[in-house]
Amino acid sequence: MPTGPEKEPQAAPIVSMFADDPDMQEIIGMFVQEMPERVEQLEQSWRASEFDLVKRVAHQLKGAGGGYGYPELGEVAGKLESSLNRLASSTQATSLDQIRAQLNELIDMCNRVS
Amino acid sequence: MQAPSSMVDKPMCTAQQEERTTLPVLQDATKPAVLLVDDSVIVHRLLQARLKHEHISLTTCLSGREAIELAKANPPAVILLDLEMPGVDGFEVLRTLKDNPATLHVPVIVLTGRGGSEDKVTAFDLGAVDYVTKPCDLAELRARLRAALRLDRLLKLLAERAEVDGLTGLANRAAFNKRWAERVAEHTRYKTPLSLMMVDADHFKRINDTYGHPAGDEVLQQIAQTLQQESRTTDVVCRYGGEEFVVILGNTGDAEGAIVADRIRTTIGAIRWARHPDAPVTVSIGLAGTDGAACELTPEQWLEVADKNLYHAKHQGRNRVVSSNVGAPPLKFAKAG
Image (cartoon, rainbow over all chains, first blue to last red; front, side, top):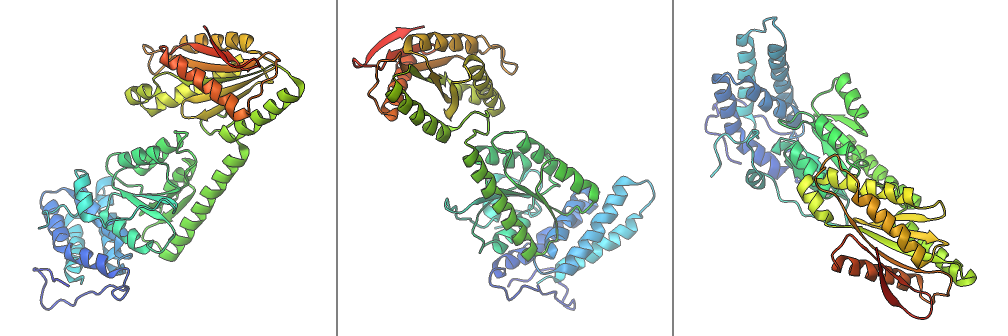
């Protein structure tokens, strides 16, 4: 299975719950292989303040994370999505720093998925 | 090799891209078709893998607009529908499907990350049969999918048994075949007058192509209504298929039938259509009947004569009636209207 180039050597890899399921191996491989692109998209969109795009990635990972055998990834993505929803809907300040921290957590996880 | 940052399917996602990123699916006509509508390719792949062993043929698409086109062209047995999609969202897709007679009865399972009660109520009110929240338990999704497939089978069985055409509410072809055989048998025994009329909308494809399928459906519905208004209660009006209708005229000979047919032709030609006021719709009619002289044709042969007359009406320039007497002595063609 190919490893992402920006993987931290010390970070513990997260293995899919379905890694041994023959129906799932091919698509899990694709999911993992595409992670660097997804991370890049998250970073780029964040830098460009395109929060809707960040939210879409988070939304998709929330919906599919568990399905691919990474429930924690789905949960972290879900938290980020909720925060971004609050950011869009309320004047009550959800601090960007806080959201950035959640985004970092998600990115860290994406990098460790294998 | 891979296109940069196109992983997350942005609204610009193209068909070509879908081809690249989605696993190939084998279409199998013997399995019920299930259409998955979700803007995320990773969800497509997941369900393709997870529903691989189900007895279904899964097709995927990335946008609401595409889903509506696919469903109209070829109504699937079940639709799995995501709510949050850029452009035409899931609610809009539901609304459009339920607004179209061809897709009205296709069971839709909403498959979404939104778990709010308000969204559920809206989805059910718009006609969804089920609602599954992502991430979802796969055994549960499979069970719900099977339940929806059962519902689809029952609805189809019911429509068949009811012998009613879904779009126009007229008797369908199966009902016609039965009724026509009965009427011909009755005629053979009692020598009562009997006529059969085939009515076909002229250049119907052009209406669909120019003004869209809703306009085409409206034309069919209006023709059906006119046929019913212009016929008597003992007559039987059926949608034979496509833009073709048949009317069994009880106690009516070919000459009288031709007058009825021409009145129908005139009435339909005079309708002003809300969607295309400058484009009237005409019909061609083929009629075969007898005023009491015994007709020795089988029901199928009799129908064939009416169909041939319809062909002559089309061939002679459309918007006309061609009728013939099928009572013995044998066939001759006469033109009326």
